[in-house]
Image 1 (cartoon, rainbow, N blue to C red):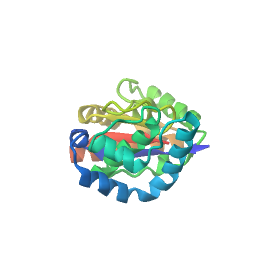
Image 2: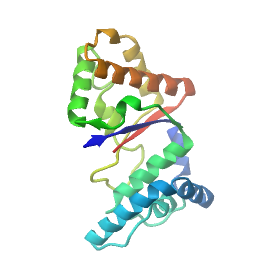
Image 3: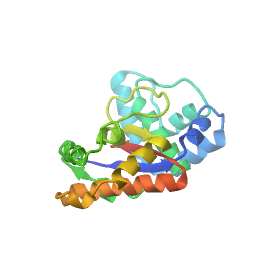
Length: 204
């Protein structure tokens, strides 16, 4: 299977302020904007709800729960994961993910990138593929058992990681695919710093 990391430059405090804000117009706007994504997601959620013997949940319902309020379906966390990701996408700026899109053998790909970051002398606390793909949301959401995997870095962390990447010689990386993937991450961080934005990503 292949997986994609979807990176976004966004001011997370702005996103968080929308949660529980009661902004029904925003919830409706998001439902309309992501109607195409909802077709497949709603079908998946309906099947999961039936399997678990619980009421169904749609993407538009998840938008409403997150933004307007209401009791959340704790056993359908993946729907809220996508809803939160799409809210970030709506309020932020999409970052080019060409080299992180449709990655086959994803675990091995991540291992190669982490190994090269280590060889370059970048500490895992500063940057790793876990930080890019699986750190979690900046807010509490119902548990997500599988995908999407959410992650985020606040602007000071992005700045630190970007500086670490700027200080190394990427030309020394012999694996061209890995070198280009790391260079793309550096471009993401440069764009975040220029926009004074945090980094958010969802991996699926």
